[in-house]
Image: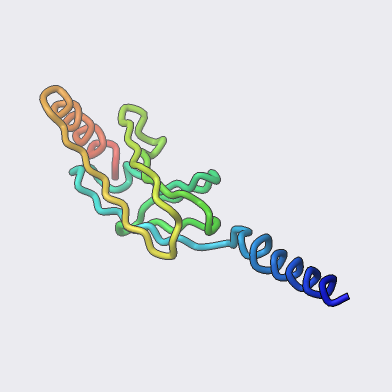
Length: 123
């Protein structure tokens, strides 16, 4: 009888602390962009692997996602001639992601053309 009670308590503890605690919880992630690309921040968006995305405003994007999400910075779909994506990082209340673009040769020319095109489209 005592063994059965102990097994019951262990089963309850397993359910409470392993199965229930491991469930992802809703989380708001504040993503700060460390923009080292020389491209305007509106060319980027923050994305979570669950499909949620948000634009940057003042260098910050806010993503309503889950604690088990992975976060990255990608190019905004508004700019089809530009493609960019960072590695993902685990979700946390505050995340800083660095966007680094190191153009060389013709890539540098493409970057300049992109910046010129963007400047003429924004009002």
